[in-house]
Length: 158
Length: 119
Image (cartoon, rainbow over all chains, first blue to last red; front, side, top):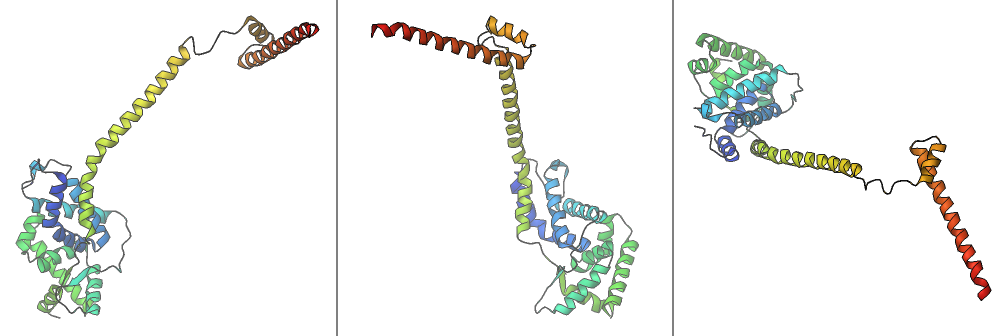
């Protein structure tokens, strides 16, 4: 839990070490843009330390929601995206560059909310119910969004 | 491609991690609020200096000593004759000054002539 008395710099470092990488990966998948994901994460941490932290009782939940809001806010603004910048890395070697590039191209064709549900379910292993609870949506909506995302990926990759 | 195959393909990858310098950027961003009090203090000192400078200037201008000795009657008369105003006064001061210098030169020359018969 965040404590108002924490030194802001030490607190930022501690929270970043704990959640930074996972928040960044989440932002990368929503935005399909590494540079914008960096901005989103930085913005969230900067805003976090300006607000009344005593009201935050769950760091991870708060940060994840804040990053999500920031990402969708960025998506509403006009911006340039470097579509050649990589989005994915192999979990295990050896890397197959053609496969990765094809998967990245297909991922970029998905809508942000489709990429988000793929990330949360396939990469983070969260259940549809957990995702639905977090996002305030029905489990059917989340599950069908995932289904549409897989169908689209299948078409694009075949 | 079946769902299982597709999910297996997906799980062979993961989104890229953050660059190493992002941590420094995040921590640096949280340090900025600490800088602002110094900026505000510097701005306050600057504003105080400007106000003090302006107030001092006004006091100096209001001081009876600030304008030097009052102009002589010759300058006043000549200024009026030239139409008044700052430029006329400046011209009058120059002319009166030149006139005094000429008279001094004449006086020096006269005293020198008076002294020469004794040589």
